[in-house]
Image (cartoon, rainbow, N blue to C red; front, top):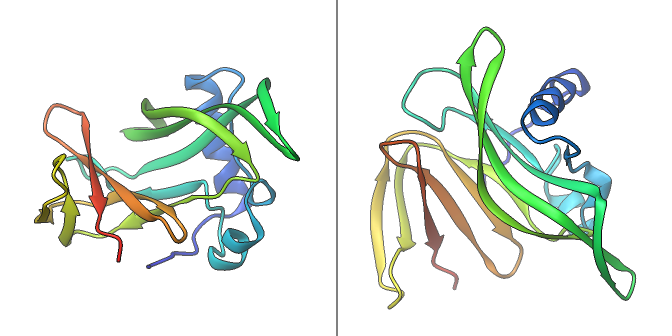
Length: 170
């Protein structure tokens, strides 16, 4: 697992401003929203990753966001909210175009994290029979990792959509 330290408070605020513009009432999860295991493993904000995810040369970012005003329920001590995995593509001059990759209930403390996958070869399962295929990433991709359960990688496709690649789990 490759984890990059890059987030400062100023940068996080810049990205939060973009999330607020695109998704009213949503905010990027903070480090304290994650389990102790993830806080110890990921040294930056596990909900925020940057890279060049689409086909241009501008910097993009992906984030796990939630709307704390939409409490859906509670399981024991764990509360869950309306949440989303989003990617925001740089549009120049400090602007971004954001899109939803996945909607889900976000249970706190959150038990997964985002990480950047660099261009290169990647093994994944992309079909229902769980056949392992090697793909070549032409640009950065977004890993959604869950400790002890494997990970998925969001891979940019022509036309602006993302496919989901499940990394094999031993």
